[in-house]
Length: 288
Length: 295
Image (cartoon, rainbow over all chains, first blue to last red; front, side, top):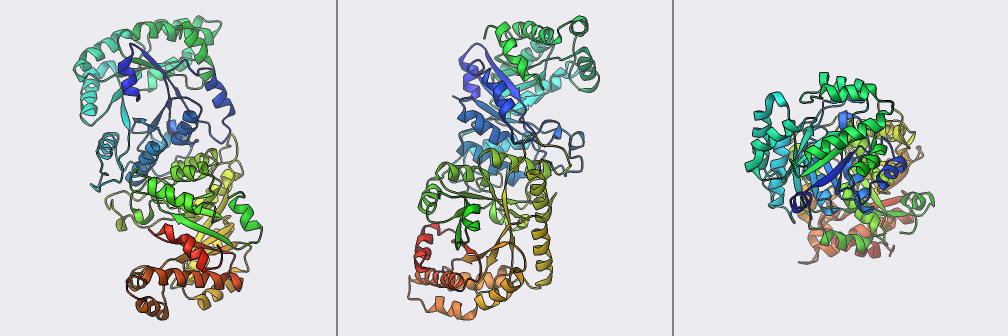
């Protein structure tokens, strides 16, 4: 069962996103994941987030699959041209990785190799369309494939309260290009998700809402100021400021938020960014 | 193969590698058949990376399949389709999947392939890729950042012994040696006397040399390569041999020629091994080995 079928088959699913290590030592990474095994529906493996060079998402996905997890592998457009992207998509399918999250990829200047050449031969919408074309048996240039890949691609959409109509239009566009599920940017207000879900209702594809573990008031203020689409309510920031155990407060805030959001969409994607070790406590609170 | 490609090379035996060309799609049955046919007969299986800029199943996944089936993969990696982030990331990925052998290439022009409108990346060239590999094995990335766990590779490169002009090719060869290439697989060679001359030069470097053997399947193929592939020169006497083969027996003749060349390379200890490229005819590699007296 691919992710989109899974999301449609049960009232509520949960995924956790992970960032592979910068190097070959997987011990800590896998140790954290062992503690959520059997408790989440899938693991989203990020591909070089913030343009920092790391272990690849596809190979990490293969390792996770061999260990009994259901991986979703991110494909960005920043680092590969259409030859490599399509070749890697065929590889994913051959290695049994079906779930793909298509994203554009962050600015190379924000990463740890700012002098690297940004590729962007395709954009995220073109990549989604390419996957659909490959599923139907031909490559982007129209050459027929010997065996078409079995892939279920999802897309990410920034849900910004100031531009909710744009987000809704983007979902419609991505559905028309073959997206099987949508993953939102981190949402902190149930009312915002409610408005978004009202707008995308007719699209009938599953929506996974991202929930970020806030590490501190400082992080929350930074995100509010610098990341488009993110709007963290003042009362959350106050709770973090007053907390004597920020780790505990963080998972409590996430758990309270998820309790409300889960009523509105098909699934939640937990974004721990470095706090992978706190995810089991969050799952405890959610009774999962 | 019970022992790794590096162990085989270090043992001093005459090593044999062969090339696997991934399919253009997910139908892998024929390729898997070739992998199973060859994995115990050769010391390493090279997997090409979108060869001739034609989009195909990726090299890394096929190397993983070879590894799973008990073979010894050699990952070919070009600089054409990925920037330094993706190249280094794929190198770490290869290691995680147990792939330790690497062949670094610059890559063909996009325009010879089947996606002519694709963007050529070439953020690095083959020498810089070799340098990146060297750094990763020392626990650092190309930008000098520390890694959480260093990489391990036995890394090689390519050289064209009959390049014309030869001088720039030799300069590049020496740069590759300096950047850490431990073994070389050459472009196809057909004139062994000329190749001996090249080996006299190459022997001053402490690197292992595998001569490239491209199976001739017809006289037409030989003429086509002479006209179109830079650095490949099939001598007239071999073309005549191919032409004189009875109808339907050209492939047999090509196998005989390849076998004869390999036998001479080994008997005269001209180089350390051969890399057999039986493009599209992987199934006859065992026949070539038999003709060479290596089976």
